[in-house]
Image: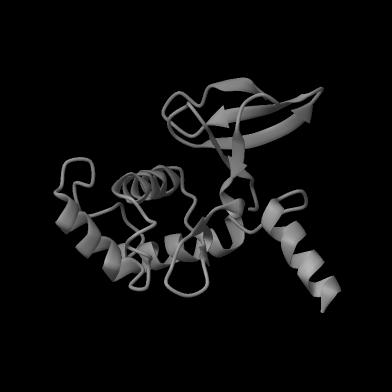
Length: 152
């Protein structure tokens, strides 16, 4: 089932878009509370479909990185204690998921957040990242891809 998963700056965790309203979105927390609340235009809201990871070559969409992580973990939760592990162990682990990631531009906090998001999605039964996190209309990546196709 295709859903729009959002990250909201200043709020921990991930959120599922439920509906649009006047100058706001109604979202549901993907945690144990499943609390619903409005997110306003002033909130910095990002669809996971818009996020990419820096690599040495072409940047990778987050859905591809999550799919690599799912394959490594065989569909289960992350196998390392990413909140407490040393930096070297964290980078060694992530290099197994995405070997070509840009070690200068991808920070420890980025990797920890990615692993946290992965665990949240798996806990909520969202594991078909290639389908569930595909850009939908209005997502920046889809808009850029359409413009690029038109230019060619």
